[in-house]
Picture 1 (tube, rainbow, N blue to C red):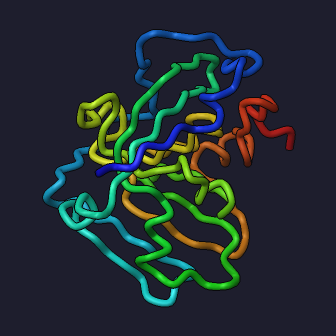
Picture 2 (picture 1 turned 90 degrees about the vertical axis):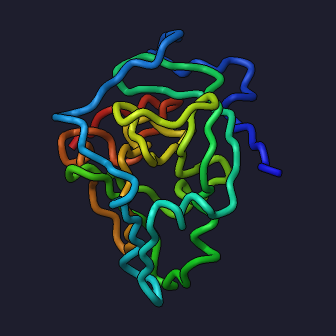
Length: 198
């Protein structure tokens, strides 16, 4: 039986952060072209501050224990989509697969095509964060980050990296793809952490 988790933000009385408006559809936004992500060649790598690095193929990864997460999406461009049902592997499963170094404080989630996003371990290991295969009962399309994308419900959606291929555990924070291009290092929609002031 798949465990279902409701993201705390989806339980708020007012679920729409400042500066956001609700949309019914799911806009497709990304930079560049959609990478060719053949599941038979897909690999997920865990690197950095771990005792032993790990590599899994798609079938191995998809066979890990699954969760369902009901959450909202908040895009930095101003739209929000409520009541999204995701299915995939909780980030917490990684704790059972690798021994994370005591000095690790951050992760860099890597996506195909050079995309990435930085997260604190606290944000990465929240109960409602997962590597999603499905959205609202359907396999994720390539345009929406399939076969696997990260979903971080409590932060702006650019942190939910598309086309995930790995996770790197780090002692020090460094900016990911969008953070290097002026987006906020953290990205809390309730604080409107959209862009860096640096």
